[in-house]
Length: 387
Image (tube, rainbow, N blue to C red; front, side, top):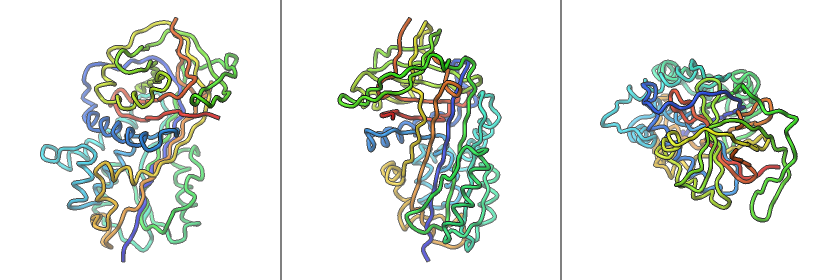
């Protein structure tokens, strides 16, 4: 019998702020950073190329974590492709080292003073007819703080209610009714949930919010609530890429980049995004008086990453030759879908510290959020249209 599965990642972000610039010195807590950041931009660039006019939000570090956890349940070529696809050199780094690094990263993100209320983790739902291996259950609990639960996945109405309640409880009610339906029956569902809430040291004053134009493209303009704040901030008029950016720091370790491409230059900036670019921005930022105009918005993005991951050297995961025999003794178990959902809300009370240079985000722009202790990419996104 062929069993099918679904890997789903769910993320919600609400942001706020205070100072705390990124240190340019190497941190011992950034062991996974080069691999994870490279994977983050590679994934984002492929996704942006396939959805050129869409809002996009993903949590790269949560996707990397979920896929690495899935590797614990894989064997043979499937395991190799999973870990190599994430960017690991298996000739120099053992499986144990990889999972131990993710364990330490998970603990650091949970314990780090990011100035955030945060709930993040993974939950594995198995059809009640399956029998998971004790070794797999022990490994996901040890390395990823995850758990496995049983559900009647053939009765999707009841199972979706159980999964939604689980996610709702884990995120303190911030993600509600996330699951609706699947394209077909499943026997395994891996849920990755993330909730972040930052606290503004200097929130936007609602009295300064005004209706202003947001130019979606050359022919479409919409009117949106535009927040405003003036103050000293770090910014850069990039001499290399056609964009300007503002750095915003949360109370603790979270760091946010708002990137405003020149009109019509979204693609050029996307192609230029890399670990090297982030490092160049970090050391090139200057402090000065900035007038910041930022739209007030709530944007969600749901992406089926299956085809995208297949293009990124994860094709073996979705073939009938996939080997997930380390999860359960019933095999073959086939992974059919990877879905990632993210939500970002930005308003006067739950927004980033705004920034004389004027930055008016009145056309499509990017948002990037990093934990600068571990240099984990918590969120990458683009705002293409507002309503």
